[in-house]
Structures are given as C-alpha cells and as structure tokens.
Image (cartoon, rainbow, N blue to C red; front, top):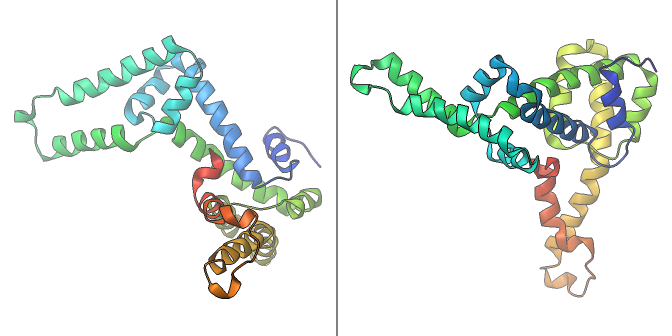
Length: 230
C-alpha cells in the first residue's frame, strides 16, 4: 500500500480491530487538537482570535484542564473572558438591530461554540474523504475495512455521505454494502441482547439465564450516542 502523510494515521486506526476505526481517528485528532491549543497555538494571534470567538465546550475545557498547564489555560481564559467582558460592557443604548444580532450571536457562540470541536470536525471531514479514496484505490485497504468489527452510526453516516459525493456511481453501492456489513457485526449481537433483555420481563421466558444482556440498555445507548468517543 502506498504510504502518504495523510494515510499513516488512517492506516494506524484501521490496523486495530476493536470497534469503530473512525472513533479511533477521532480520539487521536482530539488529543492533538487539545495539545495544540495548550501549546504552540498560544503564541498565534490568529488562533487566539478564533478561540476568543468560539470558546470551548465543557468536555474540552475539562481535557484542557487535565493537561496540567495551569498558566497556559489561565492565559487562554484571560483572553477569552476579556472578550466576553467587552461584549457585555457595550453601550446598548446606542445599538441598533444589526448590533443586537451581533451581540446575541457572540453570546450564543460563548454558550455553544468550541474551537477544538471545530478543528476536529474539519480534520475528520478530510479523513473521511481520504478513507473513501483509500477504499477506492487500494485493495489492501478494502481488506482492512472488511476485517473491522464495527462502525458507529455517527461515523458510518459521515463515510456514506462522503462516498456519495466522491465515488464513481458504480462504486457507491459496493461501498455502502461493505461498510453496512461491517456495521452489522456490532449491531446484530447488540440487538439480540436488547431483545433478550426485553423478553426477560415476559413471564413466558421466566428463568432464562441473563449474562451480558443485563447491560444491554446501557450498551445500546453508548452505541447510539457519542459516549463511545469519550
């Protein structure tokens, strides 16, 4: 298989066969993005403008705090809180409709935006495009895909959407079939366990031994949400 810089992390993720490989890519992108914000990005004015504009979500604030660079985080917070302070301290008596909208949007970003999430999403979109390219062009990568143990719904959706946009029409159906077949490896036993758990409340199945099915509800929720990426 031809190795390029952008294929290396993808192949590393696909060389493990335990759950969704794109989740593994996501976690690596997340680790790199948090490290970047807490390190080299501190000295880049363009990045600071964006972190002041977007802020950070709760999850990534917690991860930034765990890096144990308290001064770095304090400097980021000083700049970010200063931006909010300027927004809150404006003379609203002189504001018009456009200014009110801009202020409301700034506050909304402070509540819901996240620089790290944005960076991950941008890079993950490119990774999905590269995955589709590798699947199309490299037989070895197709073989790695077939050996995967599952794809989470979140990342399977991204891959399928990317395949529709980027693959020749004749390859879309094979791509969908190959990836959904892998996804079924994980989904089918999970569905069976949830069904068995439901039946355990039916008197006709009284006495049926329960094992992993006892945690089927929790496992199903983790499968259907982003919890598996945390």
